[in-house]
Image 1 (cartoon, rainbow over the protein chains, first blue to last red):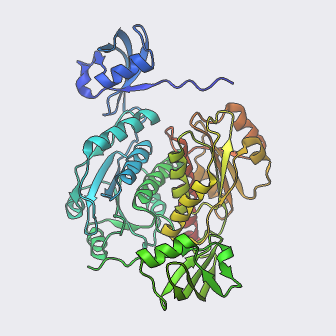
Image 2: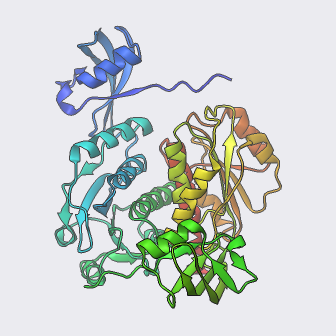
Image 3: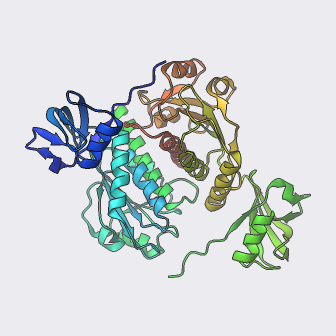
Length: 248
Length: 248
């Protein structure tokens, strides 16, 4: 049995795309393409721009300093969800755990990530460059064409005040309605789910969210780690949409 | 606002439980109880045995060498799911990724974990002691009373031949039915889901599983990493059961 041949995808942000006609890979992707994957002039390679554009290009330059080619095919919104999936999750003390969410969330089609600062948030530092690297790797691996839009950390109160469209939820261990039940009524809409830090949201933060139209939702019967809750929320929305599409 | 007070739970395997009357904590848990958490004689502490038993004990010994007490309360099946949730997942090259599944799977109520050896499995080594430590930490954190039953790595063909009860599924990216749709017909039954390695199951492995009664299921529209797929499968079953319980 032959192994499935994986076609590698390269990442080139929009500034690498010249006039919709040519793409020049950024230096690290160029090095990887030539040194590791042995791409040559005449090869066709797939490129995504992290904003929802997928391209096939025909390489006419393939040295270690310059890998570039003409666009021969272009798709917009390739492998991207039809509706928003926004996850707000409190900054976590252990960065590795936040990274785990960034990776899995990207795979699961999250379109916006809001790092939250809440009453009980102990972490403050956030490295957007590190987060970007994790998301780029995940985007390429799962063959999305867009990166989640990553917000700078914001206070919960500010996030509650935004005019988010669609279904708005706040995860809360004592909530009675599981997230998938809430989605049943509005399967095709955008979804925003907020997840608290290690110690959870404070009671009045949940009440404040409720008063702004966020429904309290449960993510199963047990206490979950914050990043697990965020992954479960994303998985629940993705699976719910898959089922709704089949039944439509 | 006062922080939620977390009551720590200690782990004492069944051999530490004497005649259903007394529990002596194992050395590492005893050290943690006395040195870090400052537990003393007269304190009541919660203990789980990893087999579904939850106890409250009244400490009458609390030195760094010996922490023990009489059982004053006992519950069986505490915070455990009513039906089996078995996840078979191929051994992964990056152990850290398998550990991520072990942790999240434990939080999500997985009752049995089957490390699989498939055609395209490149990893062979498996450290059960390391897996045990990850699962114990997760069990305590999410307040389960049982550890998932961890099987030794087995060849896929052997696992396919077992007389598993309930719904049997094999995850496959090109499958048309999402897992939650399959569960709709049999919401309360035990579930077994098999997940392939990094390169997926071989086509004939899927066919072999199908011929043994395993239904091909999809876990959303995108290609997921193996451990992400395993976590999504567990999350989907847990959330589906939460919703079914509410509607029953």
